[in-house]
Structures are given as C-alpha cells and as structure tokens.
Length: 116
Image (cartoon, rainbow, N blue to C red; front, side):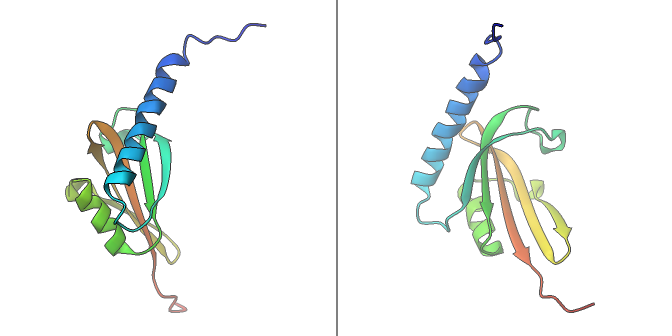
C-alpha cells in the first residue's frame, strides 16, 4: 500500500512557517508573561483567518493583564476580541495576524465562587 504524500507538502511548509513565527514572537517578547505556546490550525471561519491556515496560539492562564500585554505587543485589534465562559472560568480570545502569520491569543481567568 502506498501513502499519498501529494497533500503533505504545503501543510508541512505552513507548519514550519508558523513554527518560525512562534520562535520569533517568543524571542521578541521574552519580557512578557510566559504563555502556553502552540502551533494551531485555524478551523473556525468567524475569526477572519482562512480556514485550515496554520498559525500561532498563545494561551495565558495568569490574568487579564497578561492577555492585554500580549494583545498590545502583537498589535491585535481589540475589536476582534471574543469572550466565553464555562462555570466560573471565563476567557477572552483575540484573533489576527502578526507579520503575516495567523495568531490567536487567549486569556483565561476565574471569577470568585459565590456559591450562587
């Protein structure tokens, strides 16, 4: 059985581009709060990023100040910020591009449990 490799070339190239961008971003902003970085394939159409594009995802679990510092550093439009919640956990997510590479920054925070 032969493996079809005709579809793997561009995806690998896109992943390498995203990985390079991730390293560049982390090196340029080493003074910011430490994110949980990942390569990410964007599969959500509402972000304005082409479906299936490879890019960078930065998750921050250290408060909204860290989220805002990263959003500003990457010059991501605050108008594209989305929010969500699950129980007492809340998050903000902003999408955009940085130096031509799709980027998602997510900031997680927890509301105090009031017992309600």
